[in-house]
Amino acid sequence: MQLFDDDNIDDAELDLTPLIDVVFLLLIFFIMATSFTKPVIDIILPESSSAQKNTKTQKELVISITAQGDLYYEQKAISQEDLSRLLDEYPERYLNIHVDKATPFEAFLHVVDYAKLKRNGEFIITTQEKK
Image (cartoon, rainbow, N blue to C red; front, side, top):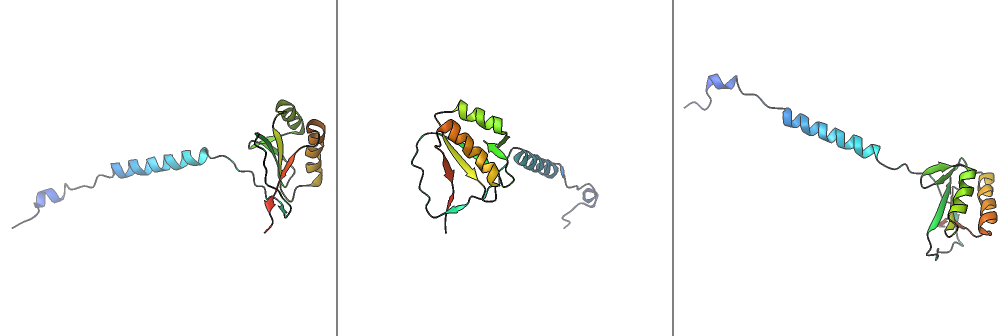
């Protein structure tokens, strides 16, 4: 009893087309997934043992200051003039400042000066709880 016909053995082939399709789909998925991720601002908040929980229920205007002194609002770099405009544009929002612990004091001081002028000195500084 012969299981295989000798004439048909030479004609047997493995179709790689579905495998190639799957590989290309995976490649396209990973390319698209990485291109649509939001950039993250790297800020290490300073620790504070006297920090209080924020009980304000109003929407906040979050300004982030990086270790290099750059200002960010909603993951976008802004200038000092943009900060002034934002404070004028959203007077009902509380100013919440996220400051990297290595930020130059001068960069922090510029934001505090704007808060004093435009918010009567009312602002929040976000810190992390001291461990």
